[in-house]
Amino acid sequence: MKLDSTVTKIKSARGRTVGYSAHFRSIGTAKEHLTKEAATADLEKLITFRCDYESVEVKIASVRGHVGAFSYNLFGDIASRHVWPDGTVSLSLANGTLADAESNFRYHVAQITWDGTLANSDILIEAQQQEFRRWCEFQLRYKYAHETLGLKDGDAHQYACDGRNPYQHVEPPVLAVAVESQSLQSRAGRKDQDVGIAIR
Image (cartoon, rainbow, N blue to C red; front, side):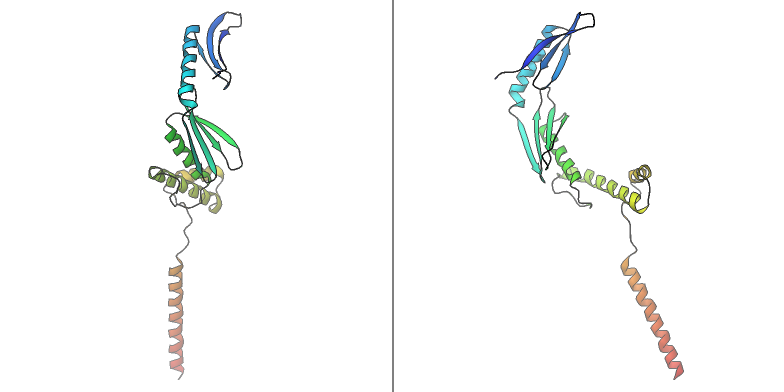
């Protein structure tokens, strides 16, 4: 396996060597060191890590048309590649495990495919459901403040941040209105009957 890597000198404006860089041209990243030995040791470590992990341990998850590919990069971080339904690929780096990266990916997909209700998400684990519900409630409070109360973005956001505020518009109970309407009609009917009896 050919690795496109090198150790280069880092020079000051006057041409004096002030450090060394262990560099992988294939991914365009480098680490700086004070001595050539330290740079070489670090480069050896990076090559070993790549051979042992990155090219071997890859996890794939497919959720609602979105695909996530998770692997270790040269520095031990998790590289998460998100392939969107239209083919666009986005990359993010994080610490943790491959399982953590997949959980975060699923949570993100749950948010961008949210159905606008407070129902649990069928793509999240139980431990994520409460956090997801809080997120949903925030979105509903913001929507209510923005569309129903007519608040501007900043004020709507402030309203949504306060969990004591309602997160959906509450209509008057239809049943109570119907019962009261029937009661009025009933009373009006009794008055008509009373008047009819009096005329006779």
